[in-house]
Image (cartoon, rainbow, N blue to C red; front, side, top):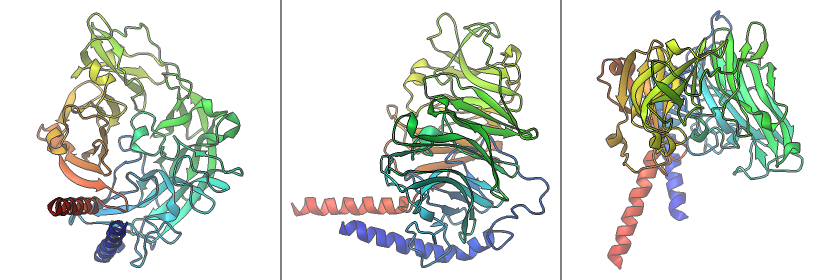
Length: 498
């Protein structure tokens, strides 16, 4: 206990020292306005659109000078800033005297908000999370909490000077202090849900689109509500887009926005393998269920070959007028190895577009798909600025929508220390500012490691991964290494003494 106290005390000193060194920089990085952010939104005629290739709990929040993160292994808010030039990191709070104890005065750890996800948008960090009436929920998912539980959106300045509530998405009174479950439980923002059922919010043209769900206790009577809310960032005004009739209806997932439309999948909790697709018209303020996918044959033939879905059928990529799913070719039986394929379906009609389907040169291995060393999805697909990005446990592969391969890059197994039999690996890809990012965590690791590579280098076949930063909480990776070193030294002393 004494060693932990000294370590914690030393960590506070390190944070304060680092903060004093970077306060001047943080003050400058805020840009326009005293709050350290953009205009929100005053004079802007065109607001930034959604970036479908940078979604999820650990979406890249990058500026010219550095990166921001919101939390790592803990569920509580922990905003950090990483300076590119120096490699230094600090908690995003500009108060030198602050101990970062999750109170109202600390931007970095504000109210111990349980984070769902965060988005860097137009000069501010938007935090979507859950809190109790006194600013805290229980420390565990099964802990009772205070009377009122709220899902809210907050806006934090880039210089760590302020954090304010934009608006409330949903709230209810938990009068009996029952177990609280929200989007995927209090841990729903973690990497474990990001690969397939990503319930993160997105921002598109000045509006946030926020999935929500709230349950007290167990059983249908404890269901408080769920659905999808649209919130205007400038005013905090909300409107309900989709309302769940019950928990079985499924929380809106995998949101993506293009131009005048927002798409989402609805994951039902009744074992349904296919996710119904919906489209919300921003112009008309109407929502419609899209056509069911039309499978002309269970074998899904195209290009003279038979094809079947992969085990990762729920990994999808939605573009402006298409939806893409992963499959594989085979000769005689569906359950055999082949090549990875991409199925293209028309969003309007649900029809399989055989002429737009793609046979890749990426090997499909059924055993790898079913017994993935990477959590929840060995094969995955997502949109990219130039088409599609397909990934497996060995690498990332870019294609345009005509099926031309634009580039590829292998997972740096030696650099990451990945062994042949390693399991429970996290490998999640994002694209930001013309760079491909790989977010990695090995088994039982407490800090996510983020690598990056230039997209241009990938296209030219000379891509090389380099370390960008680590996703950390209050206890940093450096402090973790120092604690391990001290522990090893103490063990050597004890062995010597014996």
